[in-house]
Image 1 (cartoon, one colour):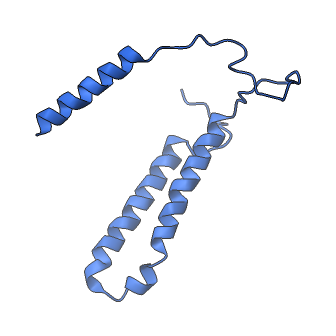
Image 2 (image 1 turned 60 degrees about the vertical axis):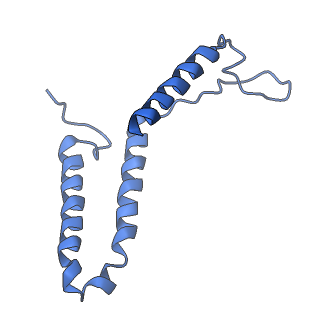
Amino acid sequence: MLLMTMILVLVVSVLFFLVSYKKLLDTETFSSYECGFNVMSVARVFFSFRFFLISILFLIFDVEIALMLPIPYMIYKMDVMLTIYMFFMVLVVGLMYEYFYGSLNWLNFISKA
C-alpha cells in the first residue's frame, strides 16, 4: 500500500512538471496594477530579514504563552507535573538557544569572528 502511494505521488509529480510551463517573466509581471496609472514604485517591497525573524520568534513564543494559560488549573494534578516541567524546559532551552545564537539581538554590535 505504501509503495502504491509513493508511486502515485511520483507519477502525479512527473505529470505536473511535464504539463506545466514557465511563463516568461517581464516587467508587467512585477508591477502592480494601478487602474491604468503609471506605477510610482516596484510592487515587490523588500523587508528586513531581522524583522521577519523577530516576528516569527514572537509568534512562536506567543503560542507557547497561550499554551501555558491552563497550567494554573492543572497544577494540583501530580500526574501532569512532569509534562509541565518538560514544557518549561523546552521553552527555556529554546529561548537560551535563540539568545546565544544571536537571533534576539536587533543590532549586532559584536561582530562574530
